[in-house]
Amino acid sequence: MKDAEWRHAYGVSGSAKLPLVTIIAINWNYGAYLSVALQSAVAQDYPSLEIIVLDNGSEDDSAARIRGFAEQNPQVRVIQLDRNIGQLGAAHHIVTQHRISGDFVAFLDTDDFLFPHFVSHHVRAHLLVDNGAGLSSGDTLQVDKHGTVIAGNMPQWWKMDAAERPGWVDIEVPTQHETPLPLAMTLVPAGPSRWFWHPGTSIVYRRRGIERLMSAIRVPIEVKFALDASAAPFCHAEAGTILLSEPLSGYRVHGRNSSVTAPQLQHFDSGRASFGKDNKKQERWFRKNIRRKQIA
Image (cartoon, rainbow, N blue to C red; front, side):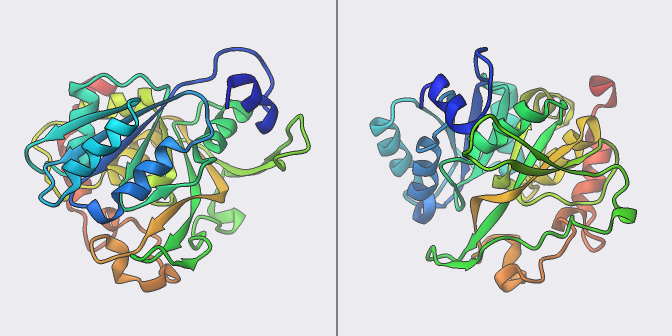
């Protein structure tokens, strides 16, 4: 869509230039799922996108698949590493060693995929609410390794009783047009909080928060450390969160992600694995290795 068409379709007024969104796909040995993920990135109906694909030293056919995809989609920028430095390490490498231009940044796990309106709904929420939130997180459809739907959303563990969520505000934002329907969301104020976001691919961050985080992290970074486990709490503590009720992405449950321990995710652990009571390693590393002076 062009800017004016997008504004009409999504009920966002004004004529100022729409914010650029950078989608960063980080891949390691996900050749089997890669095409679906990358196609979902280029199929976004949002008119202002930058797409970067980083291969983390894959040992399968991922690199060849990415090269072929980029040849067919020249708007896609490719970064090839010769070894796996992990998801958080790869994000740190991209943000600190390469130029990203988006006002907002989405990190696409290449075993997952985005719905065509993923970026549009996140941007729409930030523009219509305009509360400076550091990130937004949408619900997500669950599929198995074959792509079969196993659940229409994730359990909304963040919808606690009002007494347990002080300052949280449930709102519906009206738009200027009959379609789409008013946008239902929850605004969560900045500050310390337990984990309440949906995983990885469901999240869109403001670039300035991600840049501040990555500039403050000391290296080396352990390969197993997850991006969202540090980025979501950090960006939320600075500027708060917008939670979108609608599923906007697909989350694939398979043998290499943490959710394989909870088949069907109907009893999904409400604490992110890296911050759960049985695994504090990443949290301890993060608190020890962040350069406080750089984020003051």
